[in-house]
Length: 126
Image 1 (cartoon, rainbow, N blue to C red):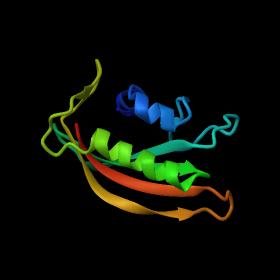
Image 2: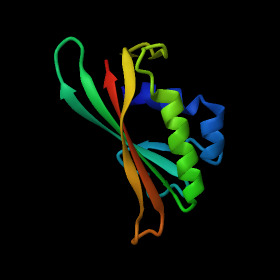
Image 3: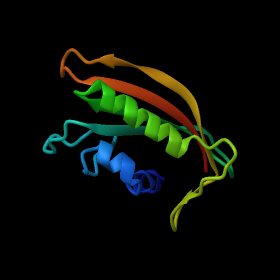
């Protein structure tokens, strides 16, 4: 499921420009050998099982540039907040039935890295 979400986001030209034209979307953590100033880290957490499963999708947008993380968060919401189920996100293995924004999460400056970080949460139904 992580692959289908990542590929969907990387197919968006506007988001890719905000990420400095890099494929800077990583699951759990950014590899240490990759040097990106602006990137997204995401996490999946199962919420319910059964035939139709609910997942919490958390995005952490990280950059030295506060205005850039605000723009990236806004773009993520535009791409993924689909309470009517009109957006089709799928590949040969996974179909996301619906996805919607559930919380903005907030923003802060990380004193250890001096980066700004912003969190946004979505509910996925697969």
